[in-house]
Length: 457
Image (cartoon, rainbow, N blue to C red; front, side, top):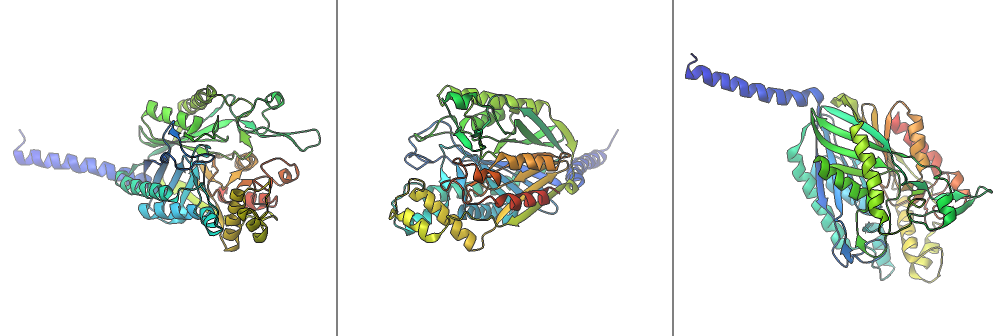
């Protein structure tokens, strides 16, 4: 029979063994992670993209992950907002970096881009104020409060880091959601711009066009426990909008339903969807939103069920970033824009708000601001982060460049440059490459493709 002393020693050995196993898990893989989630819904009366908030259909969230290795701490975050541009990117990245005790260059912040959500652009708001424009586009007090809440949530989440042993990848084809917005005529020019909703028989009958039909899913595991699931899909996430009824739209609804069903935090990133929307399959009726959500949710579920898990260690994780300067559109001239901001010149193609956004990007570029393309490598998976409303061709080119890897593209990082088309698209006409929408020119393609290839090498 064991003596009390022997029993005590055995118990201590068991405890130390358990603690040793936990420590060994972290030391073996060299990876820890956790998630954070914060309500960033605007108050009633606060501006969203096209009207003041009059109701909240679904709350808006900022969701993200913190991934820590021995070498660095990386933060990926997605806001249920229409866009986060210019100085606002700097403000949020710095706040999250300080909360995670890391560098701002290791933080990537994206927007879901649903249209009944807030704009976040401190630079444009300052320009409108400077020129005395009575603007109701930005609620800076709310935006600052929301950013502070997200940073506080991230800081708290640092206390719940846990080991990562495996990463999983799955993908599934999405049925009848995405279609290319730019329907070309026989002359190679844009004949129809097929927006997020359409009742135009010709737009509906036209082929889907160039899209990426697959929703991609990346899941982090602590052995048999799923810690977080990231999903990626390229489409404008609008069914109907514009009256101030705040919503995370059909992609956010699908994300929330999957999180509730699985009990695993789900974070969704909108891919390179500058020229992709649901217009072929969406008539803009209220009934279509849950139908589109169910189609996205079905693909999320299938990509989860078809997931293949692989062990991962700290040495399998790499972060690469390339700083670039995007070539500016030739109409970004200060006097030209100032006249339109103030209303001295009325321009049907350039509203005071659009001109102020252009001015913000012009000043940022002239002040030496750089744009970043980055990628987080997780073994044979790469999470690619791209700026602006970038065309889906960039996402497809990235996948073609590394067919040996699973490339998951998140766009809508810095919203400052607006739409980013391909070189050929700037001669085809259409809204996306017009003076109203794009702040770069066709030479951006070469700059971006070089950066994409560099970070994916």
